[in-house]
Image (cartoon, rainbow, N blue to C red; front, side, top):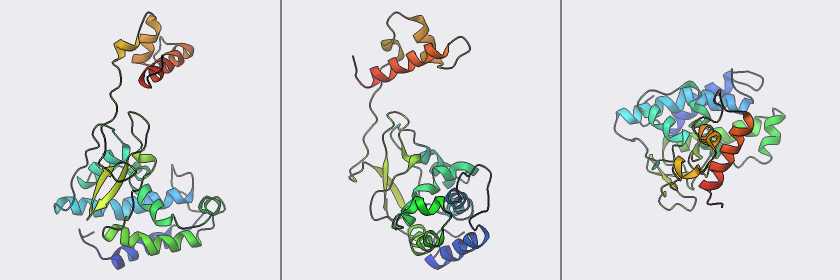
Length: 223
């Protein structure tokens, strides 16, 4: 894959994927055929493309200010040529979902294995997205959820480089500062143990749940 493929070149690679992966085909770990598309597009188009652009200096690593989103980690691995097989759950998903967003009753069609409109939307939109700045509005997905506060992080494209941002396109804000573990512990030693390891061998399920609730309540500013 070259750093600057034309939309026609992306389309040809996509056509090959669609021909070889008709609904009904299964890939280990994929729970729907749409996830098969995520997997194949990631491994056969997106990862090679990002690696080529990274080596050419056209794209750089992302800094999500400590939100630690799976998308950030997957993107940074891809441009270094170190993509993992199941990075597709984070990296390919927002690209693919943006391409097929116009399909009406999308998930009804996915569950019924009616992929004609989905295939058509992929062919019409994904080549332009991957060959250039095809995103016109911020996009998000499960891989762009902040590990710190569970809120979504969004991204938009400036040229070929994505910029992580808030939903309205404004610069991304730092995640909230969570209280230190010690500040959340008052008198129950079991909660301290639970905070360090919610499922530790010496922590009962009930203790672990109490510890988790205490941590979440304090992080949210609850009394």
